[in-house]
Amino acid sequence: MASESLPKGVLGFWGIVFLSVVAIFPGSIYIISSTTALTFAGEAAPLTFVLGTILMFFNVIAVYIFSTKVVNAGGFYKFVQKGTNNSVISRTIAWDQFIAQMTPVIISSTVFGWLIPVTASTLFNVTLPAFIPFLASILVVVYVFLLSYFGIKLSAIIAMIVGAAQFIFITAAGILIVAHSHYNTLGTFNIANSSGGLSGFFIGMVTGPLTAYIGYSAVVHFSEEAKFSKTTMKKAIITSILIAGVFETFLMYAITVGVPRSGLAALAGTYAPALLVTAKFVGVGFALVVLIVALLGQITSPMTFGNAAERILYSLSRDGILPKSLSKIHPKYGSPSRASTVVLVFALAATIITQIPLVLHYGVLTGFFYAVVIWATILTVTNLIYHVAVNQSLAFLTHRLKELNVLKHIVGPTIGTIFIIIIFYYTFLGIAFPFVLAAPIVVIWILIGLLIAYKRRNVPLTESDLDQKTPSN
Image 1: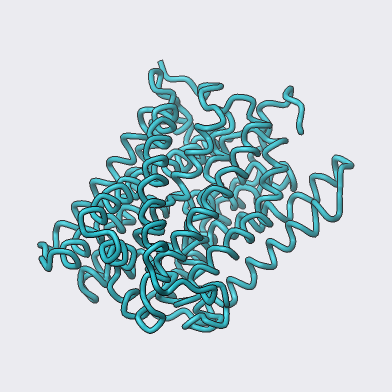
Image 2: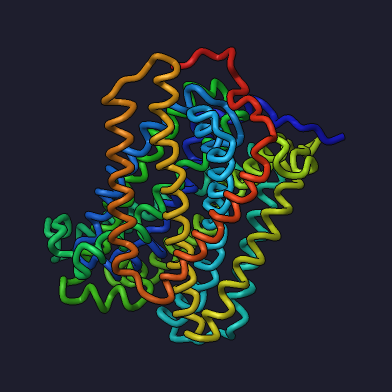
C-alpha cells in the first residue's frame, strides 16, 4: 500500500554531490553551453563561466544557511515560507520552482534530438529524416521518467557513474587541445573582447554557464531523503559548484583557443564547436567517444530535475494545495510515482508544442536550437526569480531568530540579487525574436501561479522543517 512519506537516509554526501553535478551537467560545455557562449560572447566566452561561478556563490549564501534550518522536499518555496511566513509568496515561488525544474527536462530532450542531425551533418555530411530528432526527444523524456520512477537511490548511483565518465573523458579532450593549440591567450578573460558587447556577454552568461550552474539547487528537494541532511546538504552544494566551475571554465577555454580569434564566429556557427575542435586536435574517433559520453550526460542530467519537480508536486499535495493523490509514495521504489506521471505528461506536451512551430518556420537544426535557447532563458529567469526570493527572505528569518548578521545575511545575498537584476537588464535589452518569447511565457506562468496561491491563501501553512530535532549548524 502506498504511503505519504519519502524514505529517510538513503542519500549520502557523494550521492548528493553527483546528483548536483549531473544536474549542472559538465558535458553541456561539450554540447550546447560552448555554442551559446561563443555565439553571444565570442572570445570572452570563458569569462562568462568565471563570473557565472562567482555569481552562484553569492546566491548560494542563503541556500547554504536555509539548508541548515529546513529539511523539506518543497525546497526553495519552503525556504521562503520559513523566512516570510507568507502563504501567497511562498506558494507562488513553488509554482515558479516547478517550471524551473521542468525546463531542463525539456531542454535536454530537445538538445539530444538536435544533436543527432547536427552530428550526422557535421561529421558525416548526412541529412537525416525530420522525424528522428522528434522521436529522440520523446525517448529522452520517457527515460527520465523511468529513472525517477524507480527511486532516488538508483538515480544517485547512475549520477555517480555518468558524472565520473564526463569528467574523465572530457577533461582529457580539453588537456589535449590546450597542449597542442597555438592560440592560447589570456584575452579570453577580458570582457572587452566580447563580440556582442555587454549585452551579448550577459546573454552568453545566461544561456551558457548560468543555465548549467544553477542546476545545483535541484538537490535541495532531496533533503528529506539525505543522511544528516542539515550538515550534508550544505557541504555537497558547495563541493558540486566548485567542481563544476573549475571544470567548465577550463573546457570553455580549451574550446575557445582551439582556433584563431578570427575563426570563432565561424566555429560557433557550426553548432558543434567542441566536437570540431576535439576532432581537429585529437581525431574524429576520440571526438565521437567524448560526444557519446557527453550525450549520456545530456540525457541523464534531467533525471535530477525530474526528481525535483516530482517532489515539488508531492510537497504541494502534502500541503493541501494540489490533489492528495500526488503525495502518494510508491511502496517498493519510494518515489512519488503519481507526481512523476504528471511530470512525464507535462514534459512531453511542452517539448512537442515548442519544437513543432519552430521547426516548421526555421527548419530542423535552427528550429531545435532556437527552442533550446528559449527554454534556457526561461530556465535561468525562473531560477533567478526564486533565488531572489530566497536571498531576500534570509534576513527576515535570521532577524526573527535573533541571529542577524548584516554582512552575511543581508549584504552577501543582496549582492547576488543585484547581479541577477543586471543580468535581467542586459538579457532582455538585447534579446530578439524568437528568444523574446521567453518573457511572456514566464510572465503568464507566474501570474497563473500567483492566482492559484491567492485563491488558496486560506489553506494553513504546514511545517517547513520536518527535522526540527536535528541541531542547525
